[in-house]
Amino acid sequence: MKGAILAFLAACVLALVAYKPVLQTGTMFLYEDAVTIQNNPMVRGMQPISLSTPRWLTYTTYRIDAWRSGHVEDFHLTSMALHLTVCALLFGWLLRWHSPFAAFVGATVMLFNPINSESLSYLTARSELILGIGVMLALWCVPRPDQRWTFWRGAGVILATYIAIGGKEMGIVTPLLVMLLAPVPRWTWPILGLMGSVALWRLFDQHTAIGTGVYPAGQSFLLQCAALAHGLRLIVWPIGLTVDADVAATALTWQLLAVSLIAAVILIALVAAIAVMDAPLLNANWRNDWTILVAWICISVGPRLFAHSWEWINEHQFYVAMIGISIIAARVAQRMEWNEMDSRAYAS
Amino acid sequence: MSLRRSIVFCGLLVVWAFLDHQQALVWRTNRTLFEHATEMAPNKARVTLNYGRVFDMEGQNAEADWWYQLAWNQARTIPKAEREAIEEIVLSNRGHLALERRDIPSALILLARVRFTSPEFMPGRFNYAIALTLDHQCGPAAIEWESLKIPPMECNP
Image (cartoon, chains in turn green, orange):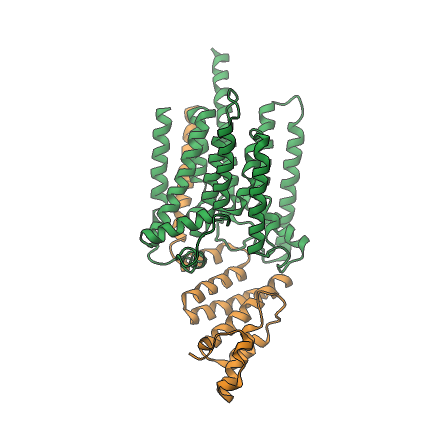
């Protein structure tokens, strides 16, 4: 346990070193950070931050940074601290369920996977980091198999969902992610439903995004699937990371068709995998891992397929999906450890 | 976990840390950011357009105009719907830049070509260009500024 904690702390230091150039951006807010932060009346204190507005917590952290010094490096330091907080929460949570090595594997996958680099470097994407903290706090409320749901655990899920929505509108899916691991108490459902409804209402009140894009709905959905496939590929093979710049709006029709075909093949393969894993001859744990993994990605990224018709799912939007992938990585590491122990016991 | 697997995993972490470092280098300035994006993204027109917008926001109008023109050229190779969307934005934004430098003829030509099919590109800028032209020719009294919903101070700096 102590060794794993020290190794995790060393990994955090390595991550800080790797991301040091981001702290040297000078005085310039990059890309849309100028709009989101510099010219945002809520951040500049010209407009109050309503606690029923999605992203209220994100705007609050910007305002604190602006009040603290206003230096761009300080904004980046806060984002870095938030990412380390998510990874530390994940590490601690995994330690409750798995071996120290498995927890280290899961937390470092989250810490270092390059798809998360946009969430750290792009200040506008801080909303994803706070959403991640909300999701992790909700997971901390899930009782272990030898424990039971209590009133405080249920209240904790509600509070964590509120924090997640304070990060980004997608926080409304937090209870669904929790329910992949354990069903939340029924008394929390109306409250969570009401919170989700208010967040959705405020979202549509602010943006009339749906149906105003340049593509027909079918083509837009196809492009989103292509973007999803592109993002999943980047998690496995992180070469070709780019900017929040609609990378999946491919330049040529044949590229669009090819990427959409890949997306369709991946989706069919995942569904087939779940069906195969459902066979009673196979190990139930593997089936659970696959089911949780696919469901987690669908819940954390899926709603974004319908949210916009001009903007495609991009790298920082995989941040919460990466939490689920990291949990599965820890479970796989745990299983490999058990298999090795079994082999050694069998050999001896 | 066996030593060999642990070493492989640590190696993977080091590679990821290196890639994180490379991405952190990309996220230093708008120029490094968009040069990287233009290199990597399949839809170069969209990225180039965004690059132009960034310079536009920074007030570097000449550079923004250059990148907008490049986006226009790159858009010729992409599917119709995407091309038209990019062309609308390029025309609208270049027209806006022409207005800022008081190049009224260019602004009128550029803005007259915007199709105004999307609510994002309201014909306000076109009206603004006409209003400025009238302002030059007939004097401020000829223009119903209120009806254009543009503050007079903005139009008569």
